[in-house]
Amino acid sequence: MAPRKVSSSTPLLDDLGPVKVKPYCPVTVEPILLFVCTAIIMVNPLQQQYIYYSLGNGTVHNSSGAVCGDYNSSDPGGQQTQAEASQWLTYLQLCSSLPSLLIAAILGPMSDKVGRKVAIVTPVIGALAMLLCSALVVYLNLPLQVFLPGALLYGMLGSSTTLYSGCFAYLTDITKPGNSRAMRMAILESCLGIAAVVGVLTGNLWLGVLGVPLGFQEPFFFAAGLAAFSLLYAMFGIKETCPKRSGQKVFTLASVSGMLHLVRHSFKTGQWRLGVILVVFFLNAGIYVTQSGIVTLTVIAPPYCWTPDLLGYFYVTICAGFVVSVLGIKLLGKCLSSYGLMHVGFLSGAAGFVIQALAVYTPDRNAAFYSASAAACLQSMPAPLMKAVMSKMVPQTQQGSLFALIACTESLAGVLFVPVWNSVFGATVFLMPGLVFLCFAGVLLIQIALVGVVQCHKRPTTYEVMEDDNDHIN
Image 1 (cartoon, rainbow, N blue to C red):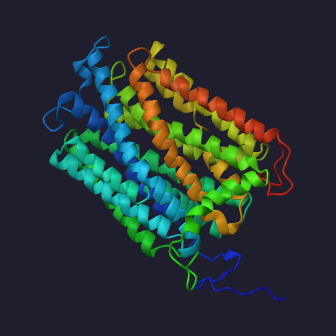
Image 2 (image 1 turned 180 degrees about the horizontal axis):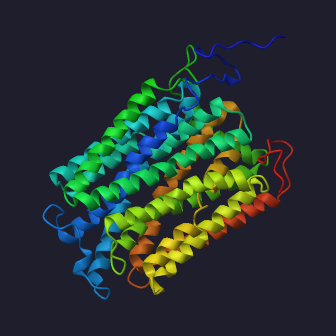
Image 3 (image 1 turned 90 degrees about the vertical axis):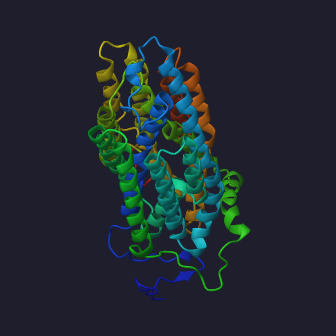
């Protein structure tokens, strides 16, 4: 029987799920993730500094924007401000993460039936609303509490985790399982690195050059403009790969239960490896969703007292690791399996955290803290690899459910671990400011052990294996 011809402009659906369509151009959802993440990452460290300076000075608008010089290393005032600022970061994270758990559970599986755009456009609208709200806070010098409604609205529209799941699910629709999909996902993941480099450098240099309050105000409005452009591109610049079937209900309980089905099916068939990898991803996300705020509060306070431009340069070196990780997957992947690459990434991240924890005790603490970025240059490798191998463990018709499950896991990590790690930081900053980084390194070692258990277990015969056929080291 001759294969069915499918028009690239009018994709068809059958009982097996979406027929792959040819997008308008090779570049699809990458610009959306790039620009939205650039906007979010640009304002995150500025928001953290704004909160710290506001708590230290009482107001940002009537000060030089610095509280570091008001304290010495033996004065607990700066450490008290750090602890209070970390609590505010916890509030903001919870406002966005808690509602996004439910929204990701709805929009992700729903995208399998009504189209991927619903899981892409909706969180972009939320990002635009949050950025506009934050811009008004810094422009009108409103109370810090006004940040919370913007973060809540961002979470109620899915937040970045739903955007990630939608973009990754979109890629599974237009790629085939194997190295090509893993590489395409690594490229998408590298957009986060590029966005981080551009965002943190631009935002912090902007603050350093203009000072306060313009150094806070203008980047927030620019970030809102990036989100608005991304929204237009998401609506009109990409082609739907999973259009709604005729007579298909927009929302059913079966859609939400798709994620639970994946977990239940994995245990029924003995494929516990999906669950273990998901747990590793959960632990990994819990670290890196908290890292930025803790690093910022550590280095802008005594004894480091970094300026905004110095902080921006540091984040550039850290975020460049996303790009380096893509090269690492490409080069090291010729001789290592996906598991081996994960081990390398975990070890790289652990080494960086140990250096950050001990940097304050070295003669040149600034140079030592900077050297952590070199040691951790491959820490971003495990995340796309875990997503790629998990995507090969479920059928094409459940990719949306899978990435919704991953998105919910990432949101849950923020809900649970951000309060935990910020509390650890606030409780130990008076004793050892870098103790939380040693805890991060210890959790990464636990992840190495869990991945090792999965790697050493015999391959299942009743389910699709995670490794590629051309992996050389099991």
